[in-house]
Amino acid sequence: MTLPQLSGPELTVMTIVVAFAAVFLIAFMKGAFGGGFSIVGIPLLSIVMDPVSAGGLLAPLFIAMDLFALRYWKPSTWSRPDLVRLVPGLLAGIALGYGVFRVLDHRAISIVMAVITLMFVGLWLLSGAKQVTRERSTPKAITAGVASGVTTMVAHSGGPPLAMYLLPLGLSKEVYAGTTSLFFTVGNATKAVPWLLLVRPTGSVWALMGICLLAIPAGVFSGWRLHARLDQRQVYRACYGLLVVTAIKLLWDGISGYLV
Image (cartoon, rainbow, N blue to C red; front, side, top):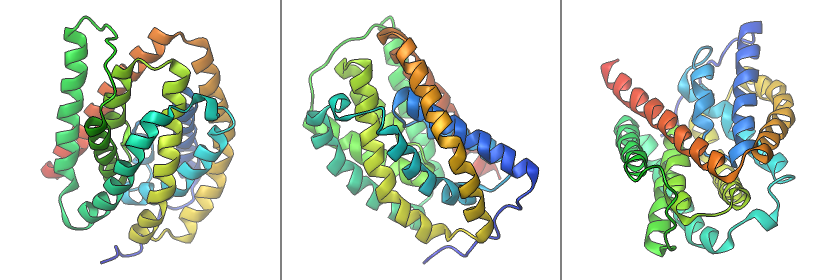
């Protein structure tokens, strides 16, 4: 059953400014780390619209971000052996996430994903925050792909499962970001149609999308410039830090959803 069409946010100055800032922030994360941390901009959007409307707004904008980011994350930055293992699971996870969104409680998924992510970061801290390189694992890659597909569909937060697979591989910072970028280019293009079927954006949402498109080039470019200035260790530590932020946001969303 399709969700009813939402009334959408009013196009006030406040709505436009907040949405523009949120999209700029998400595009910045795309340029700096290849994507996967779009949830950091959702708290801003929640100031002016409900989460479902925010999802409908962001779904097409993610595709625009991905296409623009391909200017910087070129094929030379893609880890093909990992993408071959990850992408099939991603597509299956998005299909599964679509079903979950319609019939199951996505708040529980947010809580479980948050706990797993915090445990992953905790183990990294217990090891002395050292980068330990591990070998590729097809079962782990498929699992990460499926988990990322589900969470990107229900919460726009597919970054943690992917990061938990890629970070221990010890990829260069460019290859890590480029692989992440292409992974979410495929994922965002795939999930856009299910999201638009679920939400059916109104005219005000489409108009807001058009305005927010202007934030994408500057956001991606600024993030890419930051990435170029950071060394390998700084990028990886930033990714682990963002995992904590993402996990806390997911945990809050899940728990507060039950409280409401």
